[in-house]
Image 1 (cartoon, rainbow, N blue to C red):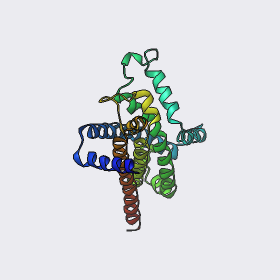
Image 2 (image 1 turned 90 degrees about the horizontal axis):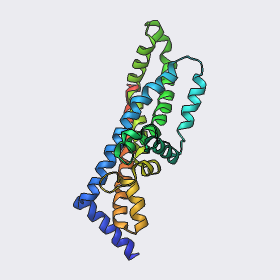
Image 3 (image 1 turned 45 degrees about the vertical axis):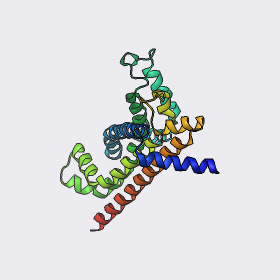
Image 4 (image 1 turned 90 degrees about the vertical axis):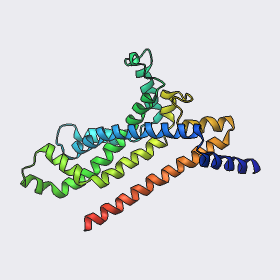
Length: 235
C-alpha cells in the first residue's frame, strides 16, 4: 500500500510540476485526437445526413453497414492501416508508418462510423419533422442537408464529443501503426500500457488521472450541450 501511495504522490507531483515528458505526451495525444475527430466529422456529418435524407438503392444496406462499423475492432483497423502504409503496401511510398499521421488515419477510420451513424439518427428525426416545410419552400437536396445539419448543430456537437471520447481512449490501432516511439508517436494510452508493464506506476497513474479528467470533461460538455439544446428547443 505504501508503494501505491507513493506512486500516487509522485503522479500528482508530475502533473503539478508540468513535467516535460508528461506534457509532450499529452500534447501529442490531443493533437492526434482532435485532428482525427475533425477529419471524421468532415466525412461523417455529410455522410450521415445523406443516409438520413437521401433516397437511393442500397440505402438500407449502407445504413446497416455504417452502424456495424461502429463496433469495428481497433486492432483490425490498425492492422489494415499497417498493411496499407507498410513498405510492401500500396501507400508505402508515402513512408507514413510509425508517424503521427498514421495514427490520425487509424483514429479517423475508427471515429467516422460513430459520427456518421449518430448524425444519421439525429438528422433523420429532424427531417421527419421538417420534411413538409422544406418541400413547400422548394429546398433542394443539398439545401435540405445543409439546413438540417445547421439546425441540429448542438446535437451534432455532442456527436463530435462522443467521437472525441472514443478517440482519446484508443490504444490498439495507434500502437500498431504508431509503434509507441518515444518523443515521436508516444501518446497517453500507449504510454500507460508501456509504463505499467515496466512497473513505472507514477507516470502511468499521472497520465491515467489526466485521461480520466479529460473523459469527465468531455462527458460534462456533452451533458451541457444537450441541456442547452433542450432549452433552445423549448424557448
